[in-house]
Structure formats: C-alpha cells, structure tokens
Amino acid sequence: MKASDNKATLSFSNGGQSVELPIYKGTLGPDVIDIRKLYAQTGMFTYDPGFMSTASCQSSITYIDGDKGELLYRGYPIEQLATNCDYLETCYLLLNGELPNTAEKEKFTRLVTNHTMVNEQMQFFLRGFRRDAHPMAIMTGLVGALSAFYHDSTDINNPEHRDIAAIRLIAKMPTLVAMAYKYNVGQPYIYPRNDLSYAGNFLHMMFATPCEEYKVSPVLERALDRIFILHADHEQNASTSTVRLCGSSGTNPFAAIAAGVACLWGPAHGGANEAALNMLYDIQKEGGVEKIGEFIKKVKDKNSNVKLMGFGHRVYKNYDPRAKLMQETCNEVLTELGLEKDPLFALAKQLEKIALEDEYFVSRKLYPNVDFYSGIVQRAIGIPVSLFTAVFALARTVGWIAQLNEMIGDPEYKIGRPRQLFEGSPKRDVKPISAR
Image 1 (cartoon, rainbow, N blue to C red):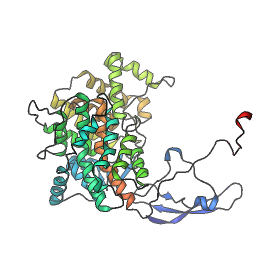
Image 2: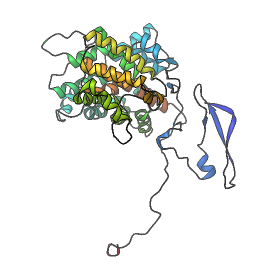
Image 3: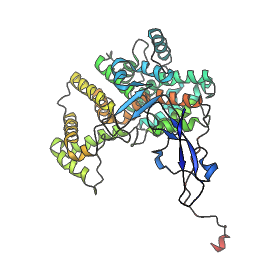
Image 4: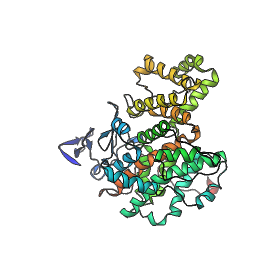
C-alpha cells in the first residue's frame, strides 16, 4: 500500500476540528481514504450500506474496471486467459500470483488430479437429504462436512494446512457437484478418472453411467473449462466478502468456503444465471418469440414486477468482458450440438438483439452479462437449471481460497466487525409484567 503525498481533510459545518486522513494509491483504480482512526478522532462512524464506496481490504488478486468493462486476474486480461490458458493454469495463477511453466503446470495438475476422490462415507451423508433437495442445499452441507473428514488440513493459521485444503477443495468440488446431481436423478455415482482433464472429468462424472461408455466432447469440454475460468474470481463480491469475513474469525477453510457457497445461492448473486433461464422458460410458456414485445413492455413498466434477468451488472457499466467470451462459446456449443434452431435459444437470441438495439436498454447500459450466456451453454450441455449455481460455486472455489489465503497473510487483518447506525429505542427500564 503506497501512501499518497496528498491527505484528505474532513471538515465539519458545526465548527468542529478538522481531521486529516491519509490517502493511499493502488496500482490501478481509485485512491482510497484511510478512515481507520476516524472513530478515535471524531467519535463517528461512516455509513455505507452495501459497501459501494468502501474498500474492505487491500488485494493483489483481481481487478475490475466497471466503466471500461475490464477484468484482470493478477494483471492478466480475462480475454487472454480464457483464450490461451486452461482452468488449472488459471487456478495456479490465482493461488500463486504467476502463471505456471510447463513443469509447474504438470505438477499442479497431477496434484489436483490425485485428490479428486472423496471419502466413501460422504455417500452416506448424502443419503440424509431428500432426493428433491436443491443441489445448493446439498453443496452447503457437503462442503462444510469436508472438515469432518480431513482433520489434517483444518488449521487456517498453518500455511501447509491451507495449501492442502486448497488442493483438496479445488479437486473435490467437481466430484461433490456431480454426486449431488446423480443423487437428485437417482443414478449411481461415477468415480473420477485420472486420465481426463479437469472439465472432462466433471462431464464424465455428470453424464456417464455404468451401462455404456461416455465419450467427452472436446467442444463441450472446452466450453465448460471456459465457464470455470470466467467465474474463477471477481474481486470483493458478496460471497468472496463472506468467505473473508468468515475466515477472519479463524474458522477452518472448509467452513469458510461453505459460507461462500451459502452466500452464492442467492438469486441476486450466483443464482442469476438460473433466474435468466427461468425467465426464458416463462416467456416460452407465454408464447415464445411472438410474445417478446409484450414481455419487453412489462419490463419497461415501472408498475410491473417483471425484470429482465441476465442483463446489466452492478459493477460493469459497460459490456461485461466475460459475456463476449461466453457468447463465442455459446455459438460453438449450439453449433456442435445442432441446437441453433432450438426454440429457447432462438428466443434468447431475439431478446439479446432487442436489448442491444432498444434505446431504453442501451441508455441504461443493460447489456447481456455472463449469466445470460452461461445459462444457455449449461442447458445445452445438459446441466439442469437447478445445478447452475453449484457449477458456479465449483468454479469460484479457487478465487475464494486465494482471497482467504491473502487475508490470512495480511499483517493488518483483524476479525471483521462492521458498525451500525442504531435507530431503535433509547435506553428504558423493564416494567413488572402486571404494569405492561
């Protein structure tokens, strides 16, 4: 953290004494005003619901420029990583700060591959859930339960434990997601295979059965790998902040990641691609492409509760860079599977066209985001809508771990303790029950 020569001066209209606050410069992005001593100096807190103007930490992992539509992992543009690297190379980068050379990539890939199996007892833990349980309910339980099986990597303050836990989580998440899916549909679990790639292994565990050989399609494998890369990290979003806050108490890495999974479940966060697909299903039920005009009218009507899901983003005020890449992948997958004329996909294309041309959406910068396209791709691959957020959690696990490890290694880190603006009753006395 580099101190600026400038200082911020906070003055008060009631004539109170002015306060000087340090300013720090990052490598990229806005400068930050250090308000850590504000309460001690003034007796006041700052008020920032949603933390839209607050830097909660210093980080060197991911940078987003929402105005430019730019996303960098450790300085590398997402476009270059998604085109030139695979997911495990991206994992290595997020965890270690640099891309691996050939030997480092082989070693890391082998390490992850050799940890993909889960304890057999996890199968019996799964049986406690109803068959129709939402996959995210199952995943929240399974990820948290890993700490009951792997006692040798639960000390968050031990760097070696953190390294082991990181590899285990990255390796086992695809197995757990596939197990949740197989449990939902009543099929036998498929064990991981060491001769397949990370994405190929996931596809095999998802869609293979003991009845016949399942051949992994290179196009679908590449598409899934790209989905993983694009969702690997995204700065201090709600689930990442949850993992950091949870980890700041000193809890074990599995519990911290389970907290991230629970947060990601929300429809405003990880559930956005599920919501986008459900929106398309609803339009399809109402009459499909011919009814899009009516749907768009409802979206524009302030008095209706109809929302355009999969468009716009809280951070990106320009085109989501991940959406461009996902759009390419979407077209490749639909062509590979011969689904270019599928009614739902035709509907999605028409909706995308209107949103990019209609002045109402263009002026509000409601561009299609990554959730819109990734939902379409996953449905085409055969992943059910209810599993979309679990796939997101699988991909984001490495980002959560990298952020957690960075926080623990920060000498300035303390247990998270936000403050509040209290608007309840002032102090009062309890009356006897007869007098209430």
